[in-house]
Image (cartoon, rainbow, N blue to C red; front, side, top):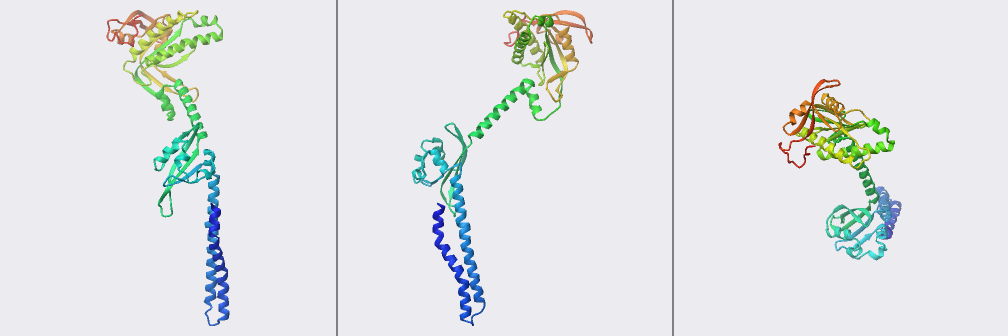
Length: 405
């Protein structure tokens, strides 16, 4: 293509070179033969010759060498390029596109683009739209970036369409792999922290601290776990804890309760954090009853029966994330400490609650008074055992509520 342009411009360049060489000589001869002529005629000849030489160089360097370079780039492009006229006949196609189509350039030039691209409907559909566009398409197992633009002449008149196709399969696979890794990291973060806290953490809000005027806190512990674990192998101990705590985690999720952490054989959860919940105490009471029922069911299938001791309290708490490694969303305050004491001073298979819990739930739940007991760090406290929901109380038939034990 470029060689034909070079041959077409050869006569013009020859004339320019001839004029450029002859003009200074002719001017000098005329000055010597005709003395009366002004000296400026020779200068004029040199000037004309210089201009002619400059034109020849310009046409060779800029009008011939540049197209040759452009065509070389066109030939070596890895992107696939095809140009059509307004009648959708192929005017030009680069070798990369020919290799993709499995044909030689001579087999497609002048043919309708719909015939040439017939085996690839997405390309035909894009050309049929007859407008400039850019989109991602899939051809077989490969992903491509497709661009269609107008082809114009020097007067900016529309003369056809340019179709440019770039293979982006490797990039798409990398993006998919990154997205999968990002999803894994997201799931791992959500397994460690509540979603609202995880979002704040990703925005760089450290340390995270919030105060809640009302929340419920629950502690559960395996009764006599130390002698129990002495009868088991390390693998059996971990398997037993995993089975139990997975069961409790599932119950907490179904009840809308936030599991906080496990410490040894103890399990801690809260409701009303990190988002306020007007029914936090009822929700936690239902969860604690469901936990005892679930352990009873688990014991029917286990050779080593387990027993839980549960403590429940409500009141103000401080919640947050501190530190830089092994982050955990935790709670602090007297409400938390007292809930822990309710568990540690409780009885096997029972849910011990504070007077604050009893006061708020006594119209809807059944309690058994335990009476005053001495609580470490708190002195004498009145406590109750939660037995179940009142069958005749408000919302007794609510589908999410646990029946009395």
